[in-house]
Length: 264
Figure 1 (spheres, one colour):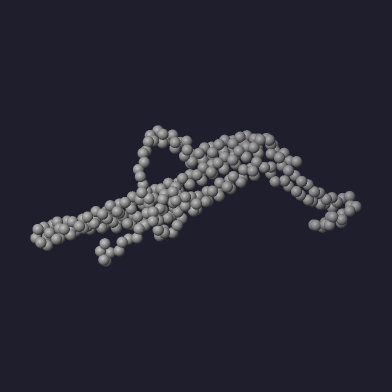
Figure 2 (tube, helix red, strand yellow; figure 1 turned 90 degrees about the horizontal axis):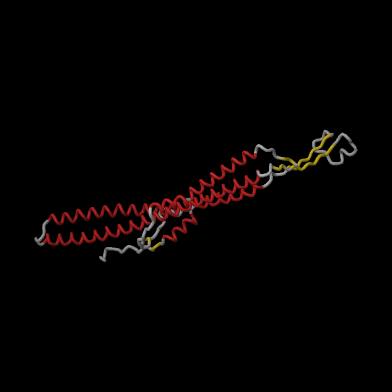
């Protein structure tokens, strides 16, 4: 290390698992979807319950709006009325409404699961992009250092008359190209960090750290297996299936509406 050079501080490594866990805990979109699911689940008992009963009080035979209870004693034309009314839907209606609320809650759960998986995918995509950019910056930096050594050798040979100026100029042009590449890669690295911080609900300038070493893994799935897995486990499709179930229950409820409700 030269006297006028300062070694950059080593970045702390950060694991993908820790970033995924932080995103699942801090991301506001996931929290909002979780609250939405809790709301839909709380509506299930309400949908299966009887309508709210009605308690009413009335009077007759006196001009006063709010008479005392003893002002109409002995008056056969007066009356005081206290009633309690309960509406009872036709048998089967409440059960269907409960099923509708239940499948609505399931659909909201799968929407929440879809958002959760999307956030995890965004974290992984930004993490792998950041890992690539760190590796690319390392590679270009090593190439630049190597070309700088060649440039110094070419300059020394040219100074003693054993080299040609063209070699010196070529080395300087390559150094300039590599410097431009480093500038672009550094900008992309900052963009990747800002993107990752956005998913983690952090300030854009928050230091992220250096990704851990990633080892390639075997990919043994065929296209047919991937298609089958997507059709059976994709949360958005499951949510749509629950919505179809809800509409089928809605058809049953519409048929039940032909029959009258009761009031007790």
